[in-house]
Image 1 (cartoon, helix red, strand yellow):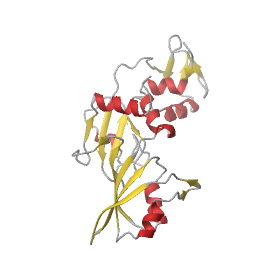
Image 2: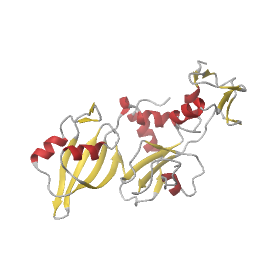
Image 3: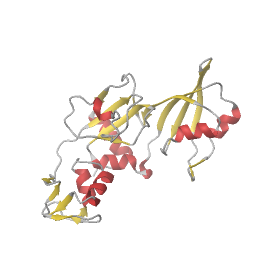
Image 4: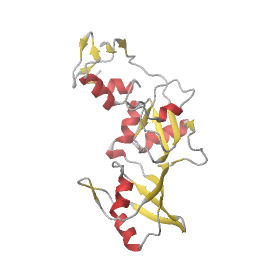
Length: 243
């Protein structure tokens, strides 16, 4: 068997994300065969014994957990927060698996958030080469002019990076503002809010309503459900074959 990177082994075991595993390795919390591991270590899961803070990590993960949540505003897309703020995992009553958010929605945004302990799928979904279209419903103040709409659909530069052009359409307009639909193929940090700022628009509410073919439908804000097997299969197929 070909050796694999230690952080991949830990992520595939469902203990934490690959990035989090790299951080724990750098902190000296991971050992291989009794010796503190370093970043870049590769192992053979058949013979090497890996421990995290003294506890053995199983080489096999038979069952994974896949969750869709309608994230409320005011919750961090994280598992913990050193400032004591509310995290999305606080809402997962009855879930025994240690799941992690796939991607992020900022503190004041809401909508679809996927969580899983399947490190392989999480890595696929967050890798730039496997981007699935994400649909957002964005309420802005006032009306949106044709020039502002043109700005939003242009290849804007955000934080020194030129984003891919987005599909943006006007869904509805009334005295309370305008609802826009954004379809993104990438997810830069606070991308939509920064796009709107460039266009001179003020975001009043932002919600992600779908990822690829997965839709929130009638899932209430703050609630969650397990993904159906066919939905998990879709995510794997949409990001490359399983395995």
